[in-house]
Length: 550
Image 1 (tube, helix red, strand yellow):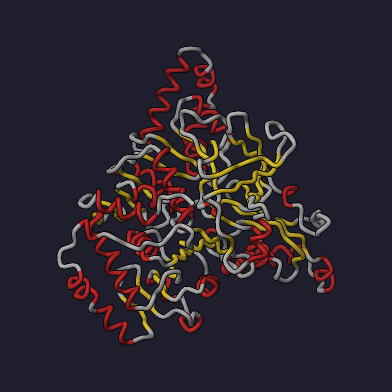
Image 2 (image 1 turned 135 degrees about the vertical axis):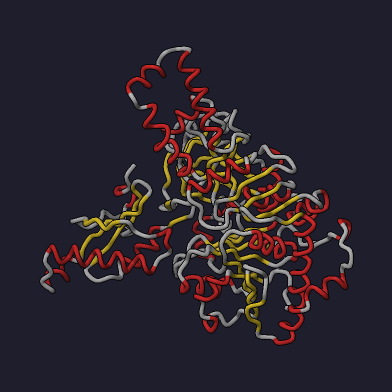
């Protein structure tokens, strides 16, 4: 366990940055660190009245917003466990996850709440609106009355709030802080249990190594319900006294770029897709022209052109950032080589939810081409091969960042963490003599959605495979779109005398029905017929890598 505590970091930041702006929704007036403290303390009073104790679970379902962040902060600083759930899931899946988490309180967007059937989440005692913190429902009439008088109760307790009044929970680092779900569909969701120690280790490392200082502006556009966005667009900058502007709706690249130009952030976190789109649509058409190829090959002149391209690209991201940190998936090698050549300030990190999330990182001026940084100081990372310098092996690790396990799933926990405490990432790579990690392949099947959301193809396949005339399927990603390879049930087709033309119509109707069942970010763009059974391992698992386009 490290000595630093997440709650301590939050307390310290609030006290030191009392009057400056902390959180704001894009285009809206924000909240100062003092105002955030007031809202946290009000929620603490409510938690106490509601009988919430240390370790109790609080569900959080909503779009990115300042109120989402306040709920998260209030819960972890009280000593309760926050359960952030992506708002994109269908009502049935949200219900399953809320029930699985054992949450007794629920904070939710009004629109999402309208889609939920409260009778199917019977353990939830109270529901609070994330839109305005009003109480939507409460089983206890006395609690509802107290909640309506919360402002008066707060003023009696804190007539004039001062920085020295800020003292939250003494909860220790080994205790559970977050249950982060890696999927939504029943049978596939895993609740990653992250301790206060894991979150504090991530914050400590970021404070010591990432280029931010108090007061710096930051734009948050990654999903906060995922650990990557939560740790580095919210928790770390908040504990550093930064001003975080939140793009509340799922932002388009145009809105993201517009926000960058207005806010001019000092640090940018991104998934590869955003950077790759700019490379593919704005840069590649220009640098591929015959005359540009000639100019870029002329010594001296190419340096001037590289500098000009770099300056233009830098202005696209606001012009003031110290570094762009790319994570969540592999970066396009061609784009990476070009950006490195022009001196663009970016680096590629590596992490996973189970580490809260950071595993490795180095700054833009020390990172190596094709690398994913060096292991953080709180993790021991090694390559499980006879020659880690040259021979690919599984990346395994242990240390402070590693999760406590999967909630109520000992079997899945044992499958990923061995008896010696090594966590098996499922990723393949090598490590050079300086400790730089080079990821060579992902043996896991996870795909990254357009906005940085994790997609587990097995969840989609489970829905598809239940449909008529489909024997099995494999979901892959092509050009950032999900494609389902379908092996038809030829026996059923023959029995029902279905023609080839009829089958195509049936499959298209099936695709639409499947998409109605899934969140929008998991929508399947196309069904493609695969005429033979998929190759399998001895354990009858499909050899997925054979069907994934490089």
